Amino acid sequence: MNRIKEAFENKKAFIPFITGGDPSLEVTKKLLPALEEAGADLIEVGIPFSDPIAEGPVIQEADVRALSAGCTTDKLFDAISEVQEQIHIPLVFMTYINAVYTYGKERFMKRCVECGISGVIVPDMPFEEKHELAEVCRQYGLELVSLIAPTSHDRICRIAKEAEGFLYCVSSLGVTGVRSEITTNVAEMIERVREVTEIPCAVGFGISTPKQAREMAEVADGAIVGSAIVKIIAAYGEECVPHVTKYVREMKAAVALAEQGH
Image (tube, rainbow, N blue to C red):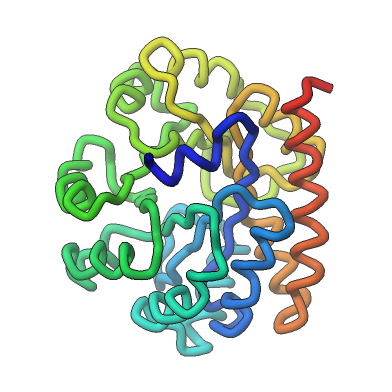
């Protein structure tokens, strides 16, 4: 069975995002098992990249911190390998097409499998160019997670039909970042998806409060939170683990309330 689907089995999923190597690889190794313990159902790990075009300033700064601290794709693979026995939920990488090509497609996917990664999200790869990675992902048993945005319109059904793992629903236009309110009609996007597939839909971009997480989980199968977590990591640095886990517990509890229909 696809590991990613397990994250959504009979529950609403809470999906935290962290930038690998921010503020250090040692902290990343502590954070991954701590996130699972705090209630994460799946973890998204960003591979630090010098030109992360989908990211707002919060995650861009995290990329700079991680790269400055000496994090490389190889070192991140090694760090995750070291703690993979402690992690029992799916992990997915969020990366950019350039980073995968620079590393080498085959080599990249092979290392993903070796360190227990279940899927990859590549936000700057258009759906129409999905074949660039789809075949090599399939070869290694990795799910290539697709994104849909409010601007996808007629493409939503086409993207959803071929979606694997889960569908990443981008709740807001623009780059990642905390937003005071989410105005997109996410329910409408998900209704379009449901016309063609039962694949789980998780909503990301802009969610930062328990109230937002609960509202998104009421209409979707899960909530993804990145910038709000990365902000906590930026504020506390090497001491961030207890602060992040406290926040994740609160967010997971909000998502669980949506599950109960409260």
